[in-house]
Length: 453
Image 1 (cartoon, rainbow, N blue to C red):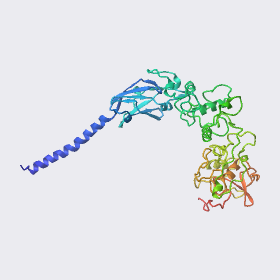
Image 2: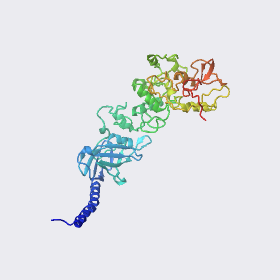
Image 3: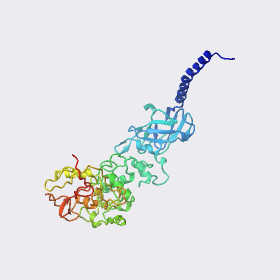
Image 4: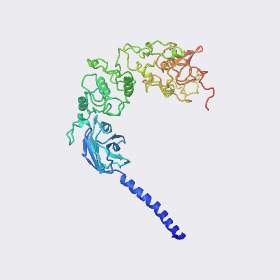
């Protein structure tokens, strides 16, 4: 039978008009049905290492296809895979990483309410306050419904996280035996613990809170507790790069040494360790090794003990302080140095009226800041001491050390200043700046012949 053309067009129009409208509605319904939702969390007070039960809907039946997200007030998160899963229930162990989300006050982890979220193909919403459990720090000593103890989370050996502190000691002090760095500040718990004992002269047990390095204070590694010019985070990195030396026998007596190879509790962690002569790499490329005498060049204070700021953690020929955040490791330090009341030398290309030299801050191109834990900051295979940051053919040892003492013995007098970093060059005393290619030589291969307006 032949269908009239008009009737056929009407039928097609009906299909076209119904199809697009129906499909999106159906897809939207499926998407909405698939989105996980948290309806109940138990218990509402739980310790790290204990388990939470999350009830709701639209979870995945296979455990590995679900992820539980813990979120602190600061926005930091931790993740865990459930141990058991159904479409309506997840059972998850609160992981050790959650400890870093807890609020720290007066040197202790405090009970902290954490919001939860489930990823099961799609993200659920974060739980509101009524569904967000309070997680207890290990120092609180409370146990949940399962009767677990804090130490049960990580107790496979005497020092589970290998941070120099035994598991029992960590529970007593409030740190996490599961985490190398409980407060997440970049320094391990044991390193901060022993640094605090050093600063306290070993007269009493670990002091536990400010004004000492504290493994439960996430904001303390920017300080220089022992006053040697190196921040705590720098001394920690020096300790790591030199092999994490730890000798408990050095704790005996009230000497100024430390059990740690580098400690932020004493300026002389290893006063009897003479810095080694750097293993220069330049001769392999036909370059002359630095002529400065080592290890004597490391001696910034001219006295017997080797202090932490004088030593050379990365073995590049530059003492630690010279490559520290407070030392002459970068261009801006030299800018502030020359702009100080002592010199009042303006940025390049301004010259010193007395002699026409221009050693001030040079900002025409970037320079990599030196680093006490990295022996080759620019990756050219030369040690930083024998290298030449500003490519003016005066190595860093020659220029950087002059900021502290007269390394070359030329008298440190130039341009009318009685005491200024300088070297003898071209028959006169010329001011140096390791981050200015025009000082000391204004005709160096990298000093610009064109000056900015």
